[in-house]
Amino acid sequence: MKRLLSRIVIGFIILAAPLVLFSFKPRLILPLIFIWFLPVGLLLLLYIIQPLRRIRQQLLDLTREDLTDPPWKHPYLKEEFLRVFEYTRDLQDRLRREQAEREQIQSILYAIVEGIVATDASGRISFMNPVAENMFGLKPGTAIGKFPREVWREFELAEIFHQVFVTAEPKEREIWLDPPAKRLIKVQLTPIRMEEEGETQGVLAVIRDLTRLRHLETVRSDFVANVSHELRTPLTSIKGFIETLLDGGLSNEESARRFLTIISQETDRLNRLINDLLDLSKLESGRTELNQTRLYLAPLVEEVRQTMDARLAEKRLSFSVELGSVAVWADEDRIREVLVNLIDNAVKYTPEGGSIRIMEIGRGNEQEFIVCDTGFGIPKESLGRIFERFYRVDKARSREMGGTGLGLSIVKHIIERHKGRVWVESELGKGSSFHFTLPKYEERLDKRIEHK
Image (cartoon, rainbow, N blue to C red):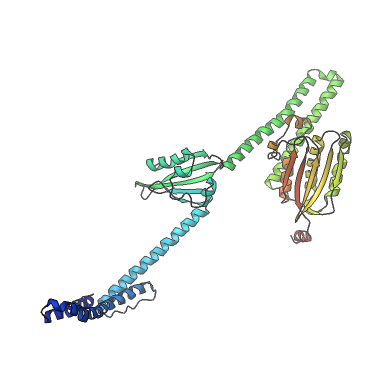
């Protein structure tokens, strides 16, 4: 620095020398400017700037990790330079660590399964992870920089952010989002503060989607209510007829026989219901092992048809099978159960003189099977719920025909255990078509089982 100052002083003396020598005559100013000041001034400028350039280059070299021997020979300058270099390197390391920590925190917030929303000191949204954006149906980044009331139509949701910011107290609330989202969310909001008693710098919200959980709770509640009702109905009937018999009904042989026949039927119904419940429980829990082998459905369909010959003849139903010779990879007993449920339903709900058809269609690695009937059909509003436990389109007719309300739910779980799909197409008054898919048989599947 001293050398730089000395160069500036020397340069000023050299430039001012002509003015002193020529006694500062005004008429010589213009020639001096062109002859002396401009060329000499340019040379002096380069002379002064040279050490500045060296300092600039040496400062740029601070980023080099191997710069341990600075070019200055003066001990004081060398010591000061090394001190600045160490400080700069420590600062760079600290900035790199902070950047890495920031990226790590951001990665965690982006990967977390809950929605995360944060607002800054001005109340504007400063962060929203993809889960929250998907939950609210927002495009990535569109909410950043906006107030909550500009992003959400739900007044309660926007207002709770403001309340937490003003009161600096955590809050928790369940809110139903308006369509098209139509979700139940649980919002937990916490004020952001640098210190425990410090001023609020923003609000952090953790948002959980409770829609599926609430739906499952409703399904469970309905299941308990339905099971209770399904068990109580036959038990009430059995109890009533037994009391009638005990009160003197045994003396009339014809009435006693009729009552005992009804008791037997209700007992069978209870037995079917309990067996279906146990079967469904095992399927849902995954405790049942599938004994998958090469299977042709045509012989199975014929076997099921023979068990229902009397009922088919009684209602004068035509029964046609259009199945080829394509083998599937499936559990024979479970698929027999699927066919029994679907064909039994077709027989039950098809009026006299109707028809039932069993068909198949190749779908790449899958084989699609279709059970068609010309029955009563299913209302459009019931198609999405037909595979639910205890769901009945016509409860009175279903109970009258001896159904438990669990057959289609069992079908759904068996097909899904085979990695297949099941669905229904129906038109009220024209009939229904139940579709299910099964994986086609391949030799490598058999070999995989043998290796196990």
